[in-house]
Image 1 (cartoon, rainbow, N blue to C red):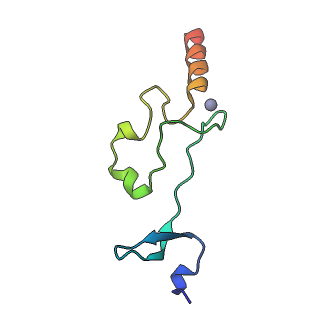
Image 2: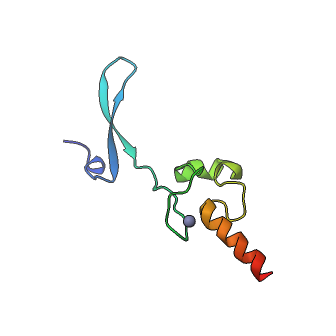
Image 3: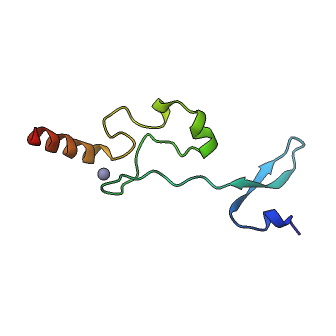
Length: 89
Ligand SMILES: [Zn+2]
């Protein structure tokens, strides 16, 4: 029987190869969800699924794309947004 804390399905069960050659089940945290466009909901490209502790120390350039609204809305929505902004002045 696994430890009480490992009975929960909130942790993933991963088969991992140990240094001795045997495989053993280890418990790993689930990866965060993919970032989505705030306007159309499409998956954003170029934004990795960092674990919160890794995202904290990662540089800003690795967490978003170098564009206005980068990491918030997708490229096509951004293009439309720039057009609207230009029209409005
Ligand atoms: Zn979009």
